[in-house]
Length: 277
Image 1 (cartoon, helix red, strand yellow):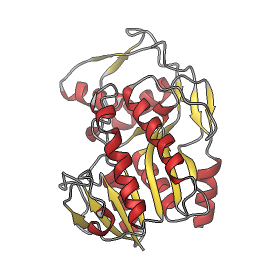
Image 2: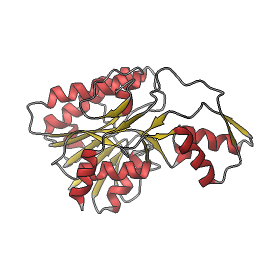
Image 3: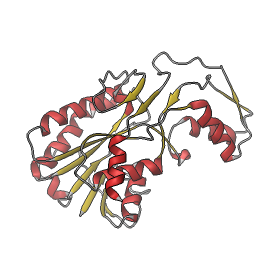
């Protein structure tokens, strides 16, 4: 089996490549920036958004494609999300029309928008950022395109990702940067809002296990399944890293579009983990 990873040099993609390789899987990795891609992979430098009808042949006819490529993922209201939307749809369309039988695409909790409580695959979506709108539109479009095709389709919906923190744009990254700059206080909200936190290594494991099987498909929440307050996570992070910087609570108000508590239903991912044992 060969698994093709697009966006293989990205924050999440590079971890997925390594995880699959460690599992003994044959991995083809494609990205514009190949510096962070594990050298054990078959590294391909290719423009996957060329619109080529024979892109599936050009990329070696993989058994599975995990489409993770996405520009400006940390800039949630960048115009590029909508400008590039059709290119993502066209890429998947051409891969499937070329013969691909298993496609997995990276999703996000930001497709949902404001929601209080657990998210499952049937939770209504009403995204409020251009990033969430574009991802949600891609998911809906691909469901329509693949409806009557003999293709396994998995939508891998990720939640609040942390770990490898100097390479992402989370609050943990910003705290590390403030510590390095010698700041004594970090301006913070109340930290009472609860989220579903998953480390990038655990996320890579869940993604890898998901795409190595076909019994569980559709929307798959890659998550912990547990709501934890931001305050608790950040306080633990400070302690574990031995940081001197202190949180300055109440500087920022809670944003009106942030839910008091939001987390993923993890029944599918637990089933996938059980299948792998």
